[in-house]
Amino acid sequence: MIQDISPHVYDRTYRQDKATAGDHVLFYEKGGVLLRKQGENWSVPRFSDFTGAEEELTEKARHLFNIDGESYYLARSACPGQREEFSWCSLRDVRSVRPMEVAFAAVTGSQLARWYRSRAYCGRCGTPTEWSTLERAVVCPKCGLIEYPKICPAVIVAVTDGDRLLLTRYANRPFKGYALIAGFTEIGETLEDTVHREVMEEVGVRVKNLRYYKNQPWSFSDTLLTGFYCDLDGDPAITLDHNELCEGFWMERSELPCREGDVSLTAEMIERFRLGRENEKPENP
Image 1 (cartoon, one colour):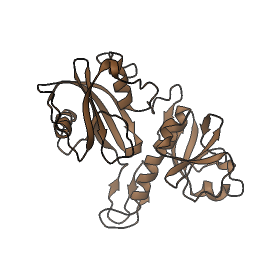
Image 2 (cartoon, rainbow, N blue to C red):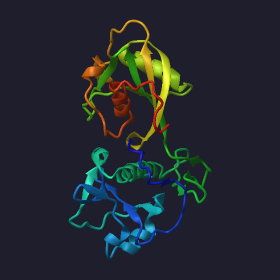
Image 3 (cartoon, rainbow, N blue to C red):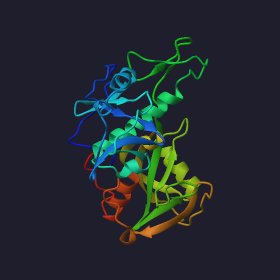
Image 4 (tube, rainbow, N blue to C red):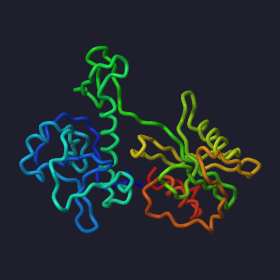
């Protein structure tokens, strides 16, 4: 999955260090992120790649995280031009960027960039916010409101009926492939409550025997996904919520296409079911 970057080490420690020329810089413009492509490999630019603009860029940039001890910063100035080997990669296409630690850095940085932009003003009194000196937060200097990065809990649900898996396809979304049932947890709900509610709302069936599988930070939608396998409980007839889905059907294990190598929790759960491994403990719990 996209967060599985071992043996590389992600360090989320909050720092206020000033950037240096050798640090990595993440620009988010035009619905994408600026990356360098050399052959089949991608990398994140460094401040030193922007000769003549280094001082302005490093002065305004904000530290995001480290990977393998190297610092990654959020650019707070417009990109000052780019060399031939740089290109804007749409955030949707980041899923196919390799090596994986570059994809992870690009999408994780995008989540923080969106949050900082959306919290420029206090949601309670409208005063311009300030970045906390102590932790990853923004603070209102007038009313004292503190806001932390947006993380939305959600579930991914693999509903099984013997050797059949329930697959769906979203309505009115760019992604047109097959998926599992998914949905956000509402206030007052447990994750298990969300599983039962979302399955009933989207496809009209009941489930039982919920088994937690694994979770995944999914920065594309500011989400923390929690995966569950569960069994059909009763009638398998599907009643589709056409506002959310355009298709829902049961597929035999033997007919499932291979999803090996995909970066999403959904794909990994489908692949494990295809291989008959849905009841095994995950390798990286």
